[in-house]
Length: 385
Ligand SMILES: *[C@@H]1O[C@H](CO)[C@@H](O)[C@H](O)[C@H]1NC(C)=O
Ligand SMILES: *[C@@H]1O[C@H](CO)[C@@H](O)[C@H](O)[C@H]1NC(C)=O
Image (tube, rainbow, N blue to C red; front, top):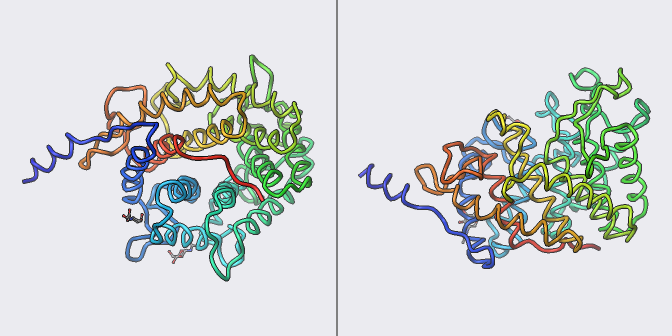
């Protein structure tokens, strides 16, 4: 019996027709089912809004983005799924809706909090139903952006530190992912609310990121990881992580969509020029900074999820780069689908999409990255107020 099940399982995999929303949504269903295997919130005694170890709080935030898109474009009549997502976000928002829950106080950095902000922004832009008696997603997001912005200080001329509190290792580090997320969130709020206050926050963070030397011209823009305040932030860690390019790129696309100013368009083109060169191999997305050595940790294994979503958002907002981005996302979609053919269910996703067939690497990160790429074929232009 077991061998028959296994055989049937292994013989299975989903095919993907990227032009059919039915096919895309079916693929997404297989992938989210795989994610649910790691979700604590539906287990007896499990914490709502959290995944099992070794996955962190930020993984949960990241997963919410594609769940909201999946609900919006594939399952909008599924009240079970809707409630599951609402419960997760509301529980992790904590009683004051600041997304600074006590349980995470030993690990939570500004970028982790900002990751929940991304989920809120997705909820806002997809008009995901709010929960009665609770603040709206927009209210929570505006509060968060203001709390993050309040933590910007003068060391190295501005910008956010990685960590929130002095007693944490990394408090002296100012990095691009943290600032890129604040930039991205402010840009999205600018477009959604038409409030210019957010354009100034976004501009300030963008120009600081450049002035401090973290974003540099080099056949496009290279984006470094960060530097330390005791060294004036000049000790650059020059590693290129693709998701950071993604959050800065989409932020620029939102600003361009709202202001119609050429400078934001040019930034997108430069970030895309370097991204398309660095992070694709024969049109298939990959993360060179850890995949080249076959040494990606649990965080890094989820980075392509953010990159894929932000690329798609960019393409939806900016027709000048849309064709090029969509061509690569389609090629990557095909590669992802053929790799999601492993495990006992026969639809477990793998890591290196450049390979043929399942590569036996599996986990929440692999599911999340695949989910965003697959959903990129059905998501639409974000809404605004
Ligand atoms: C609705 O969503 C839940 C939670 O993801 C899922 O278990 C269920 O299969 C979905 N229902 C349908 C009809 O797809
Ligand atoms: C904090 O941890 C406790 C104990 O595991 C759990 O019951 C509670 O739901 C958690 N709170 C949050 C916001 O995750």
